Image (cartoon, rainbow, N blue to C red; front, side):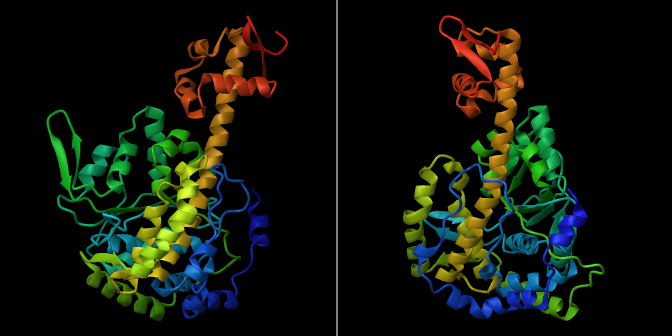
Length: 437
């Protein structure tokens, strides 16, 4: 990629644009006066078209989150979505002991986030470091850890009894790649398990069992889009890991040759406001207003449920959770304990954006893995054919690709696709064989 060309093409950060973030709070009620049915659905296709990255609508940049973006955006060329996502994730651990009672479930606001963009130009590390600095100012006693490369290390690093932990894990995607290459899924299982905030989590060793109670974890990582596509697999979509992660994408801002420091006066005010909100929220049960519940019921029937029934509907499996988690954070940041309709609609807007981002990754994973699998199968058929039937295929391909066949509908479906694409041939009584052989 030509970085200079990208920077030249990017829109500069203007005073008017920054003022937009400051003005959103004043416009918020008007922006939310439209009916619930007008909220647009995420792209239905799991394999999202690889165009420009999704962008987060400006109407959600209000309250403390909007002010944080307004303060930090002039200091780096990073997309505003990165500042938004990093700060939302930091708030999720500051409010980590709170919970929302909705639909007979207890839902905690903690998030697992990955800032996803090109190396260097999107300044992922800068944004993450800024929010860690902010967290240390707000909550000096908060446990901030770099993460670990194994389930054992992760479990050991947790406090014995439920103190909130913020994992700043820049190597998270590297850990996933290591787990995938070694064929061990215990690291993935750890993240799946801890997402649901179990009463305890354990790791069994030969001579002892490590047990930690009431784990409370939020995670912030980063990676490039291409690297995530390599690290994840179609299985990660199926087992639910991908839709538990908040993937943040966006267009980088314009060039800033000499990035200034944040406005310390505004930053100090925000630190005090968030510190107060976190203190008020400690262990607080959160409820939803009747208006919020009614709005969600309308959205669920009109959009969420139909989306989940479509092909690729697994991409929307956590849309409900993500909406309510984000709505809860907006509520607590405003020092309230009841989720109102506006909070719910803000959560819905952010959740739709996150589904677009994860669908973009999922689509590239599917396309990449399917192409590689088809090539491996075609090569095997050309080398070992004729292959009498689909049942004989697995013995002729490597264990890696053998395990992937079911992800794409089984051996017969893959072979039929290759025949349809004229990559291999088929004849009754002979089976599958290479073209011209």
